[in-house]
Amino acid sequence: MSEEKIVENTGLGATGNFIHSYVQEDLGENTQKIHTRFPPEPNGYLHIGHAKSICLNFGLANLYGGKCNLRFDDTNPAKEDVEYVESIKEDVKWLGFDWEDRLYFASSYFQTYYEVAIKLIKEGKAFVCDLNAEEMREYRGSLNAPGKESPYRNRSVEENLDLFERMKVGEFPDGSRTLRAKIDVTSPNINMRDPVIYRIAHATHHTTGDEWCIYPMYDFAHPLEDAIEGITHSICTMEFEDHRPLYDWVVREGGYEVAPPRQIEFARLGMTNTVMSKRKLRALVEDSLVDGWDDPRMPTISGLRRRGYTPEAIRDFCERIGVAKANSVVDGGLLDYCIRDDLKTKTSAIMAILDPLKVVITNYPEGQVEMLEVENNPENEVLGNRTMAFTREIYIEQEDFMEEPVKKFFRLAPGKEVRLKGAYFVTCTDIIKDEAGNVVEVHCTYDPETKSGSGFTGRKVKGTLHWVSATENVKATVRLYDHMMLDNPEDPTGNMIMNPTSLEIKEGILEMAAAEAKKGERFQFMRNGYYIVDTKDTTEDHLVFNRIVSLKSSFKLK
Image 1 (spheres, rainbow, N blue to C red):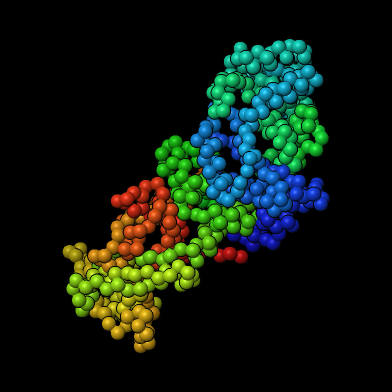
Image 2 (spheres, rainbow, N blue to C red):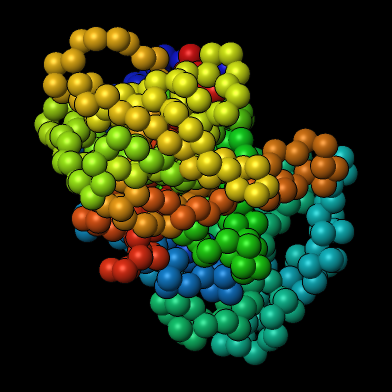
């Protein structure tokens, strides 16, 4: 990530960024009157880009002592569902924000929108149009050519009122007629060329059922919602900048010109190896390419939560990336940095072996189980210590042994001595191979005088290995997650390609402390990464761990 993407006074809570400047300019000494809103459409699960908007809108209100509404922009019944409503509420709460008693639905204002539409028709500012979608695109013109008037633009007020009422009662089929604002077909801003403000849709709505068969367009409903709720600052992403004149027109002509909301745009979040389109994310779910919206590889808030990310880490990430006008792509490594930084003092370490190699300590008594005390987290004494079972046979990681060690390989090799974390020094004396020549077992001797914590101050070794008893352990399924998508700039379609190695599943061997692990509990697997007990697939008889993030990364915070 370039240094420019994390600069002083651009954070969401930094009062020097441009949004704060607008708020202070508009409200002066009365910044506590700020009233924002987070207005998701309930047509999918929220993702990390929405988290930025949540933190921004609720964060502004919290910073100044104002208010923030949670409002569902549910004007498109064909794509919306109660499932999405409930998931969004859960996500906002989980991130640490509270809308208190200010939960609203755009659908609650359907009657008001209708009355505003009638007002516009009576004032000659809206008309019923019979052009179909293709014809309307042709009449609308282009960026280089002005539009032309619809042949239905000059219908009388009486005819428009009659047709609109018949649209309302369901007399006409979907797509046959629309209600359009009468503004300016020659405007250089295409959004002002008599935009559609109502369409016919015979669809059951998740809150109003079959009461309506005409539904307002987003660009008509959204500004009215803001005005009705007394929103002072309507904060949205940059693609709505060209829609702002229409936003202001609807507020003004709708009769809300006193203290109108101010629309402010900011750059949406782009992140490497990440899809930010709800449409594309929905396709992954519907095509069964992922395990639902909460698949730990998904950038959805529910996916990040199941993956093991904390709300503190996500809020920190949003604060660090800040707000700007210019679009940019954030290195996904920053999000990983934030979760590592949050978990490093919060989690207890346990030992887990994912690619086991058996080690037999030939001079250790057979059948003996020795309980050794090991610290849980050297950076947090409050987490205390735990005991581990040490036995004659243990497992280490295969990568921690090399028959013919390369230069600077300080782990176990023939004739080499290493420390077993929290236990003893051991020296490799022999190896056992299978018929194919693969090392399947390593024999060692231990020095009983080198017990950890015994005050031993003799010879030094460079290598310290984690280990697990071969007889006193817990089995678990361990999922190793990588980026879900490959950044592929050479793809002429501009699409991202799913990473074929985004999920690797291993059967791990863990120390006995893992037997008491609860769903949602996080641990550090020593020398490996941070993990969480999966909240969905873990059962009383089957532990499942998801890797949140590895311990190290090539990402450097500037």
